[in-house]
Image 1 (cartoon, rainbow, N blue to C red):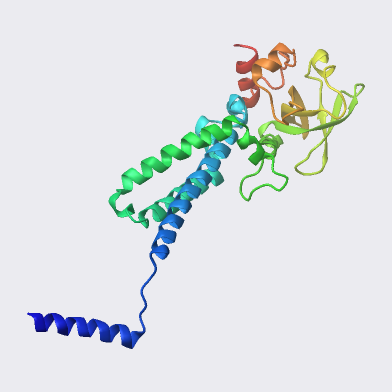
Image 2 (tube, rainbow, N blue to C red):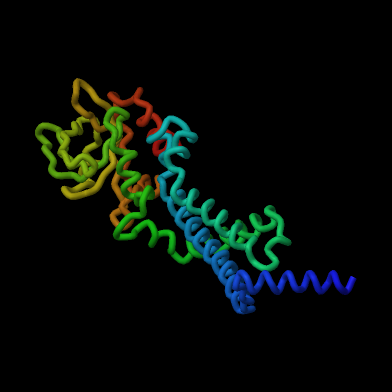
Length: 274
């Protein structure tokens, strides 16, 4: 037995000599373990940033107007879903799981436990980041993140579809004699003539050249006829809540041309029948 042990020991020594093996310092394992824990913590923090961005995006997508811009809540959710932030969050969670499992005692933690802890911490820190305004800062970056356009740009695109009875742009000029409103369209860079015969004069009087507006209307004989006009919040660049518009008398109850147009019918439900 003792001879066998010596034989094994000799084989190990020969292997070390032949392959020039050297012992690995304890600090190597400590540093490796610390690195994986640090990377897991970083992934949770980045996941929290993704949560903050997703909360800000979804809470400012103008869901109060979803039935004006979309035919169903599902269609709105599909359009408004902040895919970039959600994909980023899932990626960070997967990255965190990989790194935590490679720590010294990481093998002891089940997938479910790691997932739940990572999700919980990301949601908690993400909510805190959103509360202190970090989500807004992400949305207002000078150079937008890929596949994550600012809320202002997203809303502008949603409201820029005259075939669906929606327009968005800046007032360039009024022509009261012809009953026309000329607006510049940010998305296309073009100008468009809008007929205002269906709008209440008191509503029109609330606007000035340069104002950023949303228009609900319909196409009649190749002309776009406005049946409702809504102002943009100048500070945030998006539509304010409906109650703010109703209180400021920006709504018009008068329109015969648009009475059967779906966006206008939804507009009436929001501002007139409620």
